[in-house]
Length: 130
Image 1 (cartoon, rainbow, N blue to C red):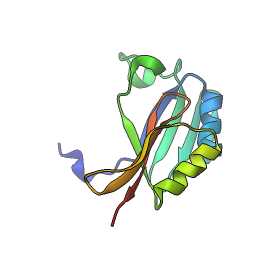
Image 2: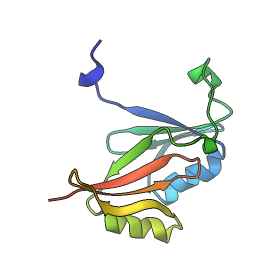
Image 3: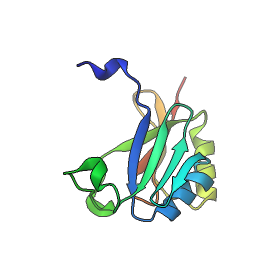
């Protein structure tokens, strides 16, 4: 099976404090809430849906695997393409977000900066350099 021709449409992320993480996605990232239930909040990017799920709830989604704790360490990084990384970082700082790194120009022609959401997921804003 070759999945490379298929698009990725949904990412499910687990959060110990769903209300706080939902607020971050709405207020800091400016995402539109598509659906909400007691244990879930679904947001829309232009080309991707992010499904935030209460960390204690997803057992049936990933069984027999388990959800790692927020402090277990990074296992992924989610990237948002932006027009101006420095402006995005200024906006993140306005919301009290501390950057992990950046903004910095990478040798592969991209300017990046990374931060962590309240559930421990690492996000990067990235801008293609001329």
